[in-house]
Image 1 (cartoon, one colour):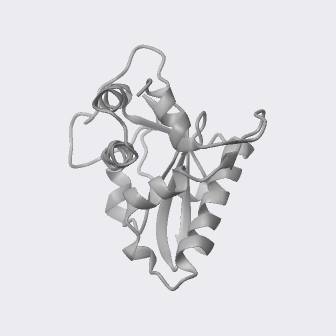
Image 2: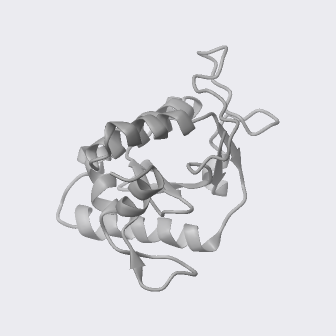
Length: 184
């Protein structure tokens, strides 16, 4: 199970059951498996960001500040968020240079998303900073949000220094996430 702490804007769009799990009418069983041991990939924050009039998703892992950016999502994407999140994470990790062993560990730890409205201001602040990086670093030059590649954009964001409450200096989220998944 992956706990996904959502903003009010996002949680209002998600088709959730009473337990906070996504209701996907196209499947009877969850696509992903349950993980019984402590899960280092648990606890992400998710935000619905409006860029150039398009709904975009920004996910930030609490412990590493590793970001996932998914531009121009449609209503149908919300019901299949479990699979969209898993696919994006694995592809971004691959593009970031994760080894086969690290990708296997990440896949093992993926599970269904359990959504709630809890929040951590520090992680939300990181999400806001990532949104600013996209808005002013990529879109100010005249690029269209629909043309942004989600995997490359996520890796670009993850390679930027990020401050983290309780830690001195800056971290590189990409280095933190790959370290969490095991030495290279």
